[in-house]
Length: 329
Image (cartoon, rainbow, N blue to C red):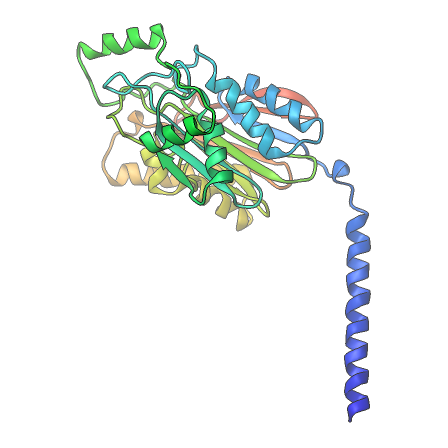
């Protein structure tokens, strides 16, 4: 009986070793550089073209997707002519520029800041929250103090142009945002590196003339951004409150997990938002939300409520701008 047990044990271990060796041999033959669709970076809106250029500089040298998305969105954060992200962003109703950002890597590591003032690059602060703290999100003064303690410089982010527009707005103080499909807000960026790993970043100054302390979807993991390295990644832009209601970016990724293409996943997420807007008997023309998605095959998708949403894609074919399809034709 003992010999029989030893024989079975030995045979089982030997079989397992053979299978493991065969699997390892097969895995070793995979060349990440020959996997189609990689590397790739996509980002929301036309200003994503310039952001993609910076991200691609990291990706083309076999850099990590996480580093690429941080480098990419920092370009937009530092652009004073972009009045919906970072420096030059339109202030809240009290004249204060408050920034939101989050970042996520291939290992489900996440970091976020919200209602952060005086710091040019909230995305880099969010990354430090991810890498240096046991927390996921820091907000307000706590986020500012953390940034200053880690070497960030305090700066005035309110440009003359944004201040002038804010003062003009004060004459009537209409707090209800008027949605203009030509208005751009938020940059969300998704990247896959040569190794096939995904990361994402999202950063914004939020709705113009919002109530002080208002936070939208952009810094909320699962709403404004979500990354699952086995499935894909998604990001959102538009009225954050509507994205939060359905945990939009996470929903898009889960729909891709169920087998839907990035395009179909974005479309279904938008349809759910439209359904909720109608359920609450709101006027659809006052709402704009767009989703952007990337799966592990390198396939992309984009869809929005209103016309006017576009996105930039940089891969082996170059850096190009695409118009997203929309629910309202």
